[in-house]
Amino acid sequence: MAKERSRKALVELLQRPGNAACADCAAPDPDWASHSLGIFICLNCSGIHRNIPQVSKVKSVRLDDWDDAQVEFMASNGNNVAKAKYESKMPPFYYKPTFLDCQLLREQWIRAKYERKEFIHSEKQEPYSAGYREGFLWKRGRDNGQFLSRKFVLSEREGALKYFNKNDAKEPKAIMKIEHLNATFQPAKIGNPHGLQITYLKDNSTRNIFVYHEDGKEIVDWFNAIRAARFHYLQVAFPGASDVDLVPKLSRNYLKEGYMEKTGPKQTEGFKKRWFTMDDRRLMYFKDPLDAFARGEVFIGSKENSYKVLEGLPPSTQGNHWQHGITIVTPDRKFLFACETEDDQLEWITTFQKVISRPMLPQEYAVEAHFKHKP
Image (cartoon, rainbow, N blue to C red; front, top):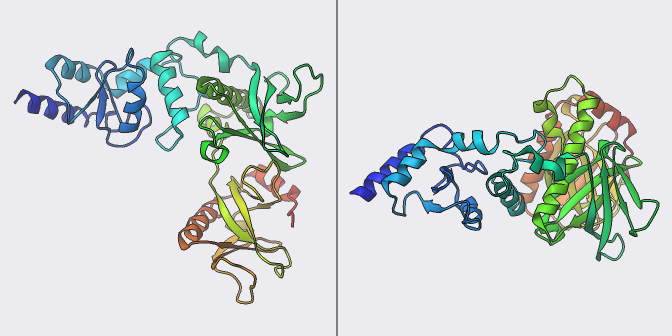
């Protein structure tokens, strides 16, 4: 009876505001709890909590035995109380992962909150909030694909992230302006659980670099340092904007990636298989997912500006091996693509429609004007 009473009390606590989603990743219907922190969490996050037993002790809400004192502790705390405590001094630029993000981001978020208490003690945020950071990351070589140790320097004052091919090199191999910088975790694509893809614009074309660090905290600190630098840059560039306006612009995950076939501008050439990345309004294609430069980029504007996506290919089309076609109509020309499966086709069409249905921002007209469609 006592076990049943405890379980019923815990299930009732799950109905309280804040408790219906995981305290750490916002996954719906959390079924686990940390009875030492007083929070309700999902199965995935419970696994991370088990790795810090000195801080967090985990039980199943429905399957484990609970004593009255533990239930009472959960009742007097809960997710909202814990958030007010453990996220009280969280800087606006710090990336707060969701259940859709990779394991590394979620693990370091949980450790930052409860183990290192970074958002209770501001001085512990120094590694990513100082405005300057230097260190070594393993970087994938552009030509040979080997990962080699390279020195990286991020400077808000200079408005750039730089890397050097040799420790004592006077000149950097690349200067990436904070204005055009993006970072996104890509563990599966890079083949490393700590893999980070950094992109920047060079002559209005996208350049990719792929890096990792053996230490999970180190690479996540780099990621948040880049976001902090972007945040402070945007605060100056848009002085009237609120944090809520700026935070979504600090870094972005790609809308979709995957293989499609494409043909050239004359649409008489054979179709070639390429790796495609939809990054905001830039559709880029690569011979290989880890190429440094795109073979070409297509700007995708809005329906008000005569952009549209159509299912299928024109009747006269030849040379495609894959049968599930997509036509993108722009003011200049049509782009023809083919997908391997109907599911792929549907996902790509849905992604393109989302982009096209969004009105263009003033600065996107400038990007469109400068955009060079590459064959």
